[in-house]
Image (tube, rainbow, N blue to C red; front, top):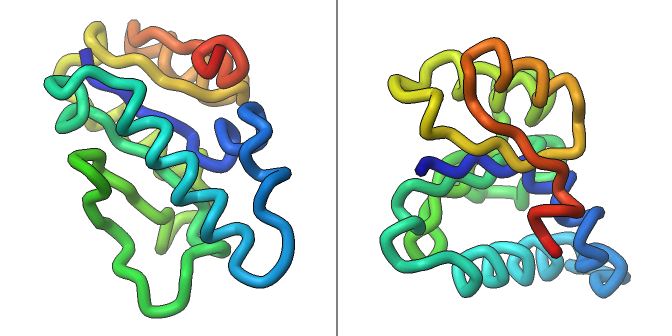
Length: 127
């Protein structure tokens, strides 16, 4: 299975964002979320997992695509928001029936269903 995660959506659903107040707080929260994802998945899933964040909150000078502990991390540069990039990734996926989209955004649930992919709310996946 391939996993596609709406990063800020999961960050809010998990409550991790609340721990990252003050200067650098959002970056620390993102890192905590990525560490949680990397530690929660079996090793063989890491290379098939992508977490997408809105580019508006990307750290200055950070590449728009990077790897974190085997997980692909993308910032939605040149897109209106992370949802637009996630929809593009859903459309481009060559095996959508093996794709799981993690987001509470029902726009993304509809995009997944159109390709016969699965979708799950962030709160449920986090639990």
